[in-house]
Length: 264
Image (tube, rainbow, N blue to C red; front, side):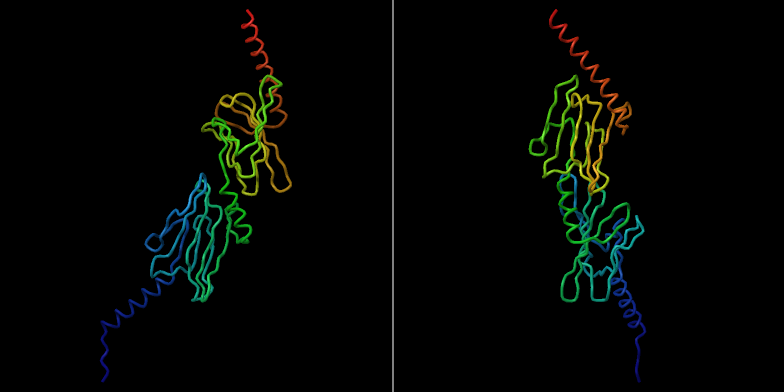
């Protein structure tokens, strides 16, 4: 006679079901379950940070998703593969690239992904490390701060009423933002774009006209900004130079008045 202990069967069934559930976890990078995933900032710089996500002991992640963009980033190809970790690199809290490290049967495998226009796509090893190198070199150029010779080549022109200051970023620097104090004039929106020149006119603290030159592949753009009462605004080139000429004439008159006062 075979006697079956129903209580033990129930416990055994529960344990099996629990273990199977632990092998089918989902990592949502926009809504992390910290009961399953360990999360920490493992590297940071002036603007960038690296966040690392690892499954807790006993848990096996079967897929990585991003609920914010409603996308699947990675899934297990077979029962042997298991997620080791995910490194996500961000600029000012905005995710840019990610590295997914997987434990395979006899090796490790890395997948590289990038988000552009809210779409995650797989990229090459070389593309990943090119982007990583760039985001580590990103800086904010602020007119209120002293100009750093190791970061910019500086040229000054005093031939008119308003002095013009031209700054060209050196090879070790990529400009993320151009600012005047707390006011943002220009900001990088495409990681493939590069700020190649910044020109502003007048004093750093009172300047109202700024020209930013950028390059995207073979396309060079000139962007013109004017400071208004409610902040900086992008304007047309023709208007920019008309307003600049007006301010320049006002500066020349002010200089002439100062010289007259000194001679009296």
